[in-house]
Length: 248
Image (cartoon, rainbow, N blue to C red; front, side):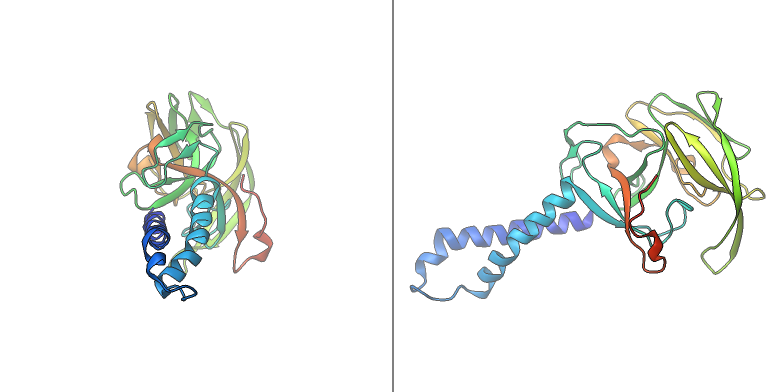
């Protein structure tokens, strides 16, 4: 959000300098005289910043995954692209919906402004949509009273912060129309409980179920906080084979 605000400020400043030159400053310069350096830079940067701003605001925006809360779907260090118009066109900075297109569905991997601190962006998976009754109990997810199918895939080991080795089990879960992988640590404790998703809100969980601070801890994601749907991994410095992978 702060970067978007920075871009808006730079866009306005460079645009105003360019317009000021056209309307006033240019007339006072001698014919053939070079543009002042500030005007020259503004004329050069304004079109580039405008194009980047429009793409980031309404088409696609890059993000970097900072943690392992979405493992094994997304790894720390993945650079991803987020579709900005899947959930409707939104006003930059204010995030008000200009054109409503779709709403998040169960199984979507989405980016949103973290409700307790909206200047921070989070990425999780949509588990509950408005009206859903969500129960998480004994490492098992229930939606509207229905237990979700979960199939064991393999034992999974990874290195967490502090170079600790974590031993987990990899499962495959059917969530709506999406079949996705998740991690469970059988001997760890995670928050349990039952909630009903209110209108205009969503219940989000990380795929690394026992190492994710999500809606179980801080509540629901308001519609106002939506950023977009994650769909593509475009870079990873450590694992080149992940480049070009779609996000399910």
